[in-house]
Image 1 (cartoon, rainbow, N blue to C red):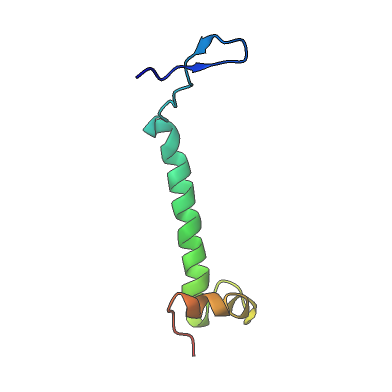
Image 2 (tube, one colour):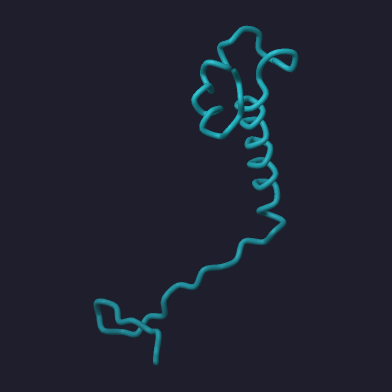
Length: 75
């Protein structure tokens, strides 16, 4: 079976094929995303008490429901 399609003039047109993204171009974005996830995990899971980077309970109260949703104890 032919994969060609017809355009508005009735001519045969090949559909565009996706090109793979080289790992060399993807790796910095994967590392950046991983670091953002680790930072979010820190703020949700450990930002309180002796390890606190930001004084007060502002961050704790902001991520409180997410903390329980992910199974982190906080009380």
